[in-house]
Each structure stands twice: as structure tokens, then as C-alpha cells.
Length: 403
Image 1 (cartoon, one colour):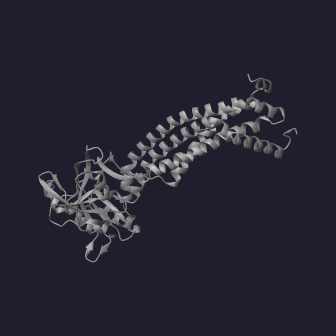
Image 2 (image 1 turned 180 degrees about the horizontal axis):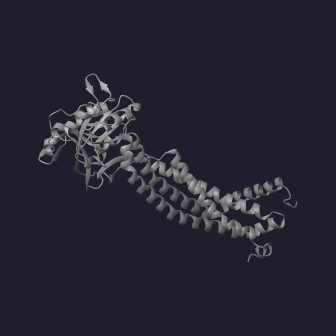
Image 3 (image 1 turned 180 degrees about the vertical axis):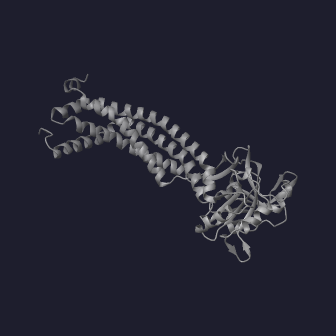
């Protein structure tokens, strides 16, 4: 029976017939098909793995700070490290309307922030670790901070508690360990968690003990404030703006930490995309080779089909569809490999704005997996397009002679 391609139904029938034929003959070309799948899987695994770093940092930042939490620093300061506020400043903040209360406590937490050096467990190299001095209100201002192992440090003593992330990434933070920091010995007495937030990268102690140890007098770096509600932010900010005693930079905690991690996220995303792009070029050439080989091996079959009335466009569509199927299989395999290898893997990296290490867990989520599979499909589309056009344009007489 001769296919004339004179109507739409006939056109789709030709596509279906050719595509089914191509897929049925894949086992005969399993070597080249396997190499294409492996190449695409490797690209997707690398892409998803690298970008899961950025996703992990974003999730950690998202878990840090609630909508009703505000951070106060000296006006002009970009980070806690470049900010200094005094006890009088803290008193001004406490007098501002819009702050939440619990009993007699006004929920303002003045905090001291210093950087210490601890060796990484994985490499033994020194890393900058945040060491935070807090007051009792720190546990009321922040949601979800809880000592989960050992005990809380005693106020007025050289005792510390370490975040879960810091414990896993840095040496010397096991319960009962002693830390020599400056001229003082500090004892680790507990481990705390904060729902995966950035606080888990830190070590905490009594601010009143940390101040003289680092010769900070009665100064702090910042103050965290818990508002009466998320809607109280403008009232609180406006009151401080018109107060002549106030000289603060006011930000929601979530916005502050998002800005702190922006450079890191951008760098990871750019590098990850660049690496995946270069590998993607290699995968495209692999797909081109696979599909050109497939077309060459079936040139007589394609010519015979064209002689029977199969038109060029169905041939193009069938070859591209085969390339998309191989790439989709590779994409799914690569995405699953990345999920199995990286999801939940804990690591630490330097926050270039605070120059302190932050700990986080790689986050291989659904949207990222879908992004990897879509990237694989693009590789398949480009890799199959030119061989498909060649197959459609191949003269019947040449193909039948096997030239």
C-alpha cells in the first residue's frame, strides 16, 4: 500500500509507523544507544548535583527568621561583623512600640558576633566559625531553637552549645570537649537545632561572658527583635525613623540572610550552569554521533520507506523522537542518581559577605529534578535534529546503493 501523505491522518499514521519501527530496532543498536544514555545521565547528574548546593543554601536561609523577626544593626553596616551597637542603643530599641512581650520580657535579643577558627572534620583545614554571645531572650526571639543533646550552658560560665550543623562539620565540638579560644577555655555542654536554619552553623554562649573575653566592653553587633505581629513592622520602623536617638539599619531577618547568601547562590548557579553547559556540549556531540550512526545503519530502510510513499517530515519527526526518548531515559537516570547521591548531604561553605562558614544540606527537590530532565530533552532535541534532516534529505538512489 502506498502512502500519499495527502491528509493529516495519513501524516500522523506515517509518524507512528516510523517511530514504532525505530524504537523496536533499538536493541540492535544498544551499544550506541547506551553510550548516549550514559552521556546524558552524567550531564544531568552533575547539573542537578551542583545546583542542589544553591537550593540547599536557599532552604537553609528560608528556615532562618520568621516574618515577625527583625534584625537591628548600626546604620551603614552590611553585616554583623561591621556593626557595633551599645547598651544605650538596646534600651532605645526596647522602648519602641510594636515589640512582642512574654510576661515581663521584652523580646529584644542583643547579640555579640565573633569569628573563631576550628578545623573541618573532612579536611582538617581551619575554617571561620561563627561564635555568638546571646542573652536569654535569644531563645524567645527565634522560633524552633532547642537544645537536643546535653544541656543548656549556664549563664556566667565559660560554657557553649554548638549547632547541629557545626557539630557535623567541625572538629572539637563534641559534648564534653574543651575549646581554647583566646585566653579562655570553653566547655561544650550541649547541641542545639533550629529547624535547619543558619543558627545551626554557630556556637552560642553567654554574651556577658563573651564580651570581656574578646574585650568588647558592653557593646554588641546586632539586636534581634520579635514583633507583636508581622504587620507591626512598619509601625516599629517608623517609630525608630523619627527617634533622634536611633541610628539603625532595620531589616527583616529573612531579608537580611537572603541578601547575605545572594552572592554565594549566584556564584554556585553560574559555575554549575557553566560546567553543565560544557558537559552538555559533549553530550550533544554524543547524541549526534549516535543518531548519525543510526541513520547510516538504516539508510536503505529509510530509502525503501520513502520509495513506498513515506514523506520527509515523518522521517524527521521519528528520528528526533528516538533521540528524545534516549535523552529522557538518560535524564531520568541522571536525576535519580543525583537524588540518591546528594539529597541531604551536609556540607559547609564560606559566606563571602560575613567571611564565616555556613552549614547546609544539599537539596535535590522536585523542580530541580524536572529542570535536569528538561535539559536532557534539549540535548536530545539538538542532537537528533541534524541527523533527522540528513535522513529526510538523503536521495533514494544513493541510499539504496549504500553509498
